[in-house]
Amino acid sequence: MKIDEIQNGIVLDHIKSGNSMKIYKYLDLDRLDCTVALIRNVKSGKMGKKDIIKIDSPIEINLDVLGYIDSGITVNIIEDGVLTDKHHLELPERLVNVLRCKNPRCITTTESNLVSAFRLADKTRGIYRCEYCEAEGS
Image 1 (cartoon, helix red, strand yellow):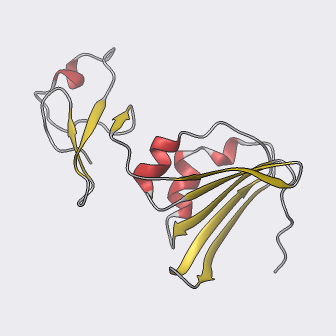
Image 2 (tube, rainbow, N blue to C red):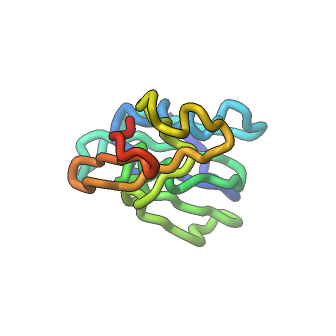
């Protein structure tokens, strides 16, 4: 299989095997008018298997969302065929409008103009809590 190199765009590497479709949906990559290559189950010395997404266009990406989905992702920015920037993601300390509070008594369920905000409560388990009511996010 041959996947062409990218001249200007983004490569999402080191995605846990099976997470690429989730990322594809979260980032609305189906709406792009450029080439998007989703490569699944690539052999990896460090990970065993991994997924890779190549986007052949420079776009804005919410790194917090990516870090929440898979904190091991590497985001590579390519310009004129050269790697110009690299980001190693981690779990973000705060998520805004990514999770929704499931507590029916939370103010965010009745006040639609409030942002849905969660803070990282337990980094080792990846648990987030609502900033308004402390309910666990999912």
